[in-house]
Image 1: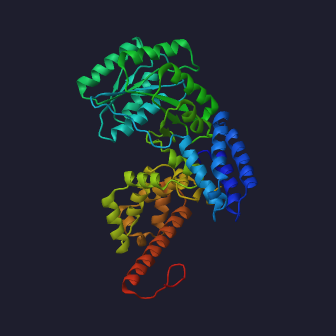
Image 2: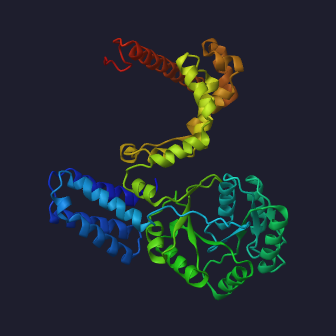
Image 3: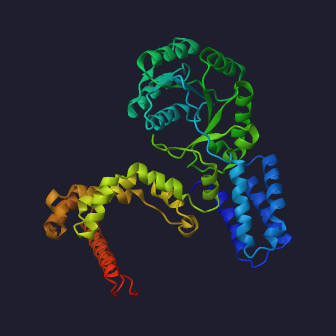
Length: 448
């Protein structure tokens, strides 16, 4: 879960307030003290915490809140709005140049995930009908060029390189020329990093900046470094004048300090968030949606966007027709499973459902189970997938051997599938009954 410790503490604090019919100034002060401690423990910058708590408190002790019929909810609304404001208020997009190519320069310390982020960003931009080019300008880190070439190959984006014997400024210039000549409308430059900030690193980055005049300088920051990430952002902004931040490793054991401090301290927007290791695991940063997720209010919009991006509308209509005609098969089940897996880890998807984070706390989502299910279905013949009723004992034994599972696992999946089909039939009958205006039993026993 994103910012698990912080989210849990804030949600517990506001749960107490919601349970009160009336809230007085002392209740607000007590709640704000807990909020302050939670933010400090999450490694949020002290000045940022102080300003945030003062703003919330000033609004929360107003007459419209304390005299409200739902004061607890009003205070949560205020906290949500102030958290959103703290992280940037609105989404900040890449400013694509009207005269291509748009040049994006990625900078940051070594280990923040710059090279992988180059690939992730290229893949994301490619979805917008752009033709990106990656430029390998990190000549110091061993295998940095090779890593960028591998990443570029995985996302099907070309990589420009001149090896590690050339000056980074010359590589950037030549790469830009190459992009112009080959019709690439976006250039992403992977620059060198260090384990710490030094004059040599900054001098080189300034030279690259002056020679190619990038439209965007994006700082890649490791979210797990907490308050240190904010210090890094301050230094890079002071020396280079960054245009935005990309937060990486936001899915790890992140306390939240970087995300909640970096915008307030640098006054530069967080543009993207990387939420995993896969090259698809990057998304545009929406401050309002992130605030909702921290407060356990879900993120339905992002969930819908993921579904729209990964689910085929034509297939969805076909599936609806199959459910209505009761011809849903294991092949359809496998297809839905693969589309769902494309949306990302199930634990992340559950976080986006309002209230699910708290309700499903402690629930272990075993992604391996999905792999076993997929293996079992793929070990069936086409005829068996389309007609599960022919799956006798010998067939089930063969499927178990072919999928590396046990006969019990195969039996369990077939039973669950049959139960799902039965429930689909009941809901289809329910829909037909509603259209006819009749009364009938629901799957769970009630009546209309």
